[in-house]
Image 1 (cartoon, one colour):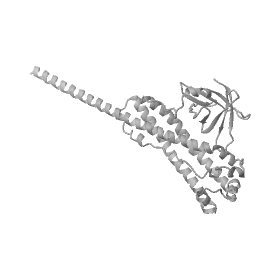
Image 2 (cartoon, helix red, strand yellow):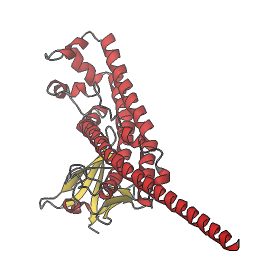
Image 3 (tube, helix red, strand yellow):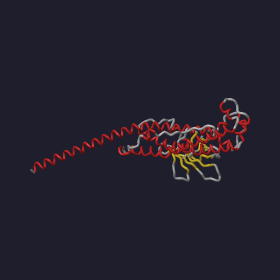
Length: 323
């Protein structure tokens, strides 16, 4: 009896072990399938991220095109001839939207229990990125839309020359004088400057920075090539590195740009926070939500830069050293 009892126990143990092995293999196989599916969706998220980055870059370019004109109009540095010889009068008659897409990112929901450490980290960052900025960007898209449409509606209902906007003829003198001197118009320009550059562009810029960091890491994880139209080759941007001091006797503000493990970063010297820095060209960039342009001497050496944003007074910085 004892022999048969031991034999039965052994058979039961073998069955249990077999079941455990089968369950483990099945779990491993399901996890493997889940991780493979996750990686497939990640590739779509990667494409979606490129779309969103291009959209925010396009928005920034649109505002940069208007940047100096907003400053001139709000600081009354334009003339009647400036309006007649250019399209300055359309300054706040149009707008662009970002329209962030997160359709692919939403498909990642429900994967957290079947991922490895690296995948879990990427998932968390993707979710955080869109949860942090998507709703705000959608709201700002709508706000700039409303701002422009309200102004257009008021012009259409109150100005007899509004119909000229739809034809190729020059505007009447009355219209040019309106854009040059009318305080109602200047108030709308100021609102467009605030809603557009300070807020709409500001949120877009913040998303763009975080998205570019994620794009680099996601591209590396997927073993793909970095698109240099999105992230410029740092080898072409080393001249940005250095310490820059604001030219203002009433301020000790300074900005330092560093090469941190083949990625540019910037920080204000009186702060401990470091931010990613992605110049758009060899001489043009955005930094802390403002448009920047490098200054050079006759030898083509970088001597500093200017930061500007709409109607606000530009800030000029002098390059102190290259460290």
